[in-house]
Amino acid sequence: MLETMLAAGFHWSQLLQPQFYIEHGGLWLLLFVVFAETGLFAGFFLPGDSLLFVAGIYSSNLANEIFPTGNEYLDLVVLLVLIAAAGIIGNATGYWVGKKVGPAMYGWKENLLFKQRYLTQAHDFYEKYGGRAIIIARFIPIIRTFAPIIAGIVGMDGKKFTFFNIIGCVSWVFSMLFAGHFLQKWILTQFGFDLKQHLEVIVLGIVLVTTAPVLIKLFSVRKTKV
Image (cartoon, rainbow, N blue to C red; front, side):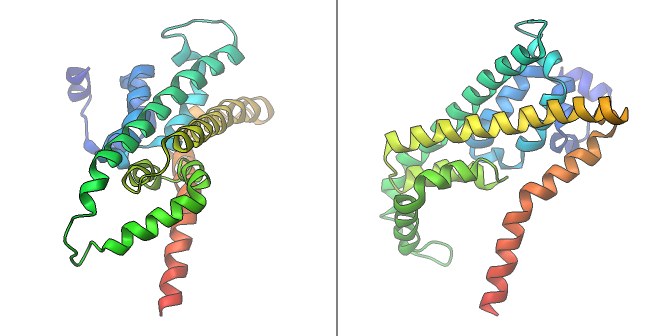
């Protein structure tokens, strides 16, 4: 696969394009990306939302790689189960890493970037909003990478985390996957417009929609301070 990528003129910017993973790695690379986005600390740059949306458009192709069903709905169910499992395991890995690192952080010396009160505030936040935080974080790029790690660091209850981790992952995968599949089907039927031919625009739109809440929050906080 590496030789094929290099021969095709690979550029690192392609790692931000969801169609790249589907074209060069198929279902197995997709599952790894979903896992890595939360299971590996360096996975924050991976295209989670847009990748799942595009996966919905190519659902039959992806499902047929391991379990040909001949039915579009069964294809979606197969992908839902596999991708949700990858996301759940990824979140659990991030939580475990945070759990291991967390106790040592309470002994760290304070500096310009780290204050002990940050841990206390984060702990209180997860105690009050922990469940909703884990679910909502699944739908926000970058935030979903660090949410399970922070939950582990502040010692969020393991059973509580697991419960909301499952709900969040299944909801995220279901919404993105089914939206991609049925939107493509509806637009193609009604207008004869094939989303596969305009994936760059679709991906840009998804990125803008999913990052808008974070940007709005950042600007509102900045204005409040001013």
